[in-house]
Image (cartoon, rainbow, N blue to C red; front, side):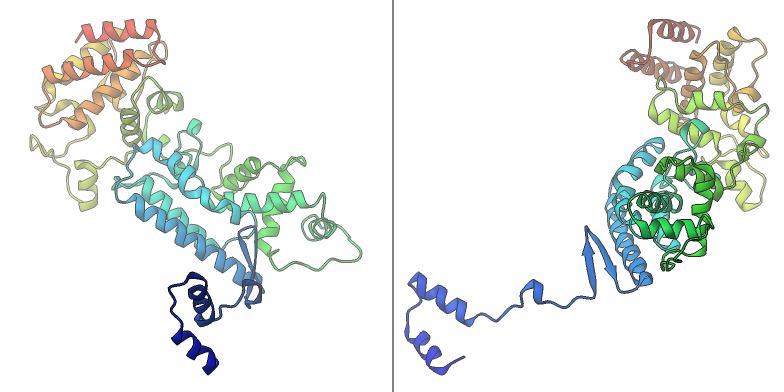
Length: 401
């Protein structure tokens, strides 16, 4: 700075506002303007594009991974919901942060797997055991949790944008016709860097199953079925562990609005055998399972819920009521989660009873069991899903206890 200017500023009193502002303007360091900065990327609608496609994919994935992990770390401090509500929370508030970039950049599988792990870990935060992997992503009507499968959905959005661009972009149309439809195109278009072998195979799969209706949901379902090899003959692992498996009966326990959400979540864990018990502990330790209440050795699930000396009186009341509707009702059928479609109130009755036994195995009594069922009945009366016929049937059930 000029020596004369410094001398003048030292002599002037900066109490006068204009001179004070002038001094501040002269003495501050020069800051380069934004349009004069040199950058290695272009940011277009929130997506950073670098000079190479590999660097673009890596940067986008790392940015999303940091953002998702930051949100998930905040949830660890106290964002707790019932199991069946967590997939909706993950889809709405966690995975929704990535779909914009996923539709513009073909993200790396390693980054997608890390993001998937963050979501799945939140859903099963209080579960020591995990169900079959495909169950996480199947629809609720198929007995699953309907968590977004990140790999399939991210790729579905990217493919959807490519196929939609065919209608307005001559170059994209030529690329898809040449490399995905195997047509003769002249002049031959340059193959873009993002069009690798895996992406070409997925686009061919979508084109073979779509009638020019490029819906992201349809593409996602196609990729998901191909990822887990879901065919018409596909069966879940739990189907082989129950006699006369009935998906309709299972859904009555996990999807019925008449059953409280906490009880439905508990039933989902029981049906998919991810609720940690003495039997699971013994299986891990390679020992014979023993009851922690009565001490009996080599027990099964029927003993845990009905034959333990602390629960015998409750189970006798419970099975006596069920035999009113079917004299041949057995404990084995209850643990196979079989109900009577003509008696929908039994699903409510069985689910609430199993929930009470699991929560009160050490201190459960007949009086507390009756009080619990009647209190749940009072709550059911305030539900908009229960009609008068259903409430009357439940009232009769509880009178028989």
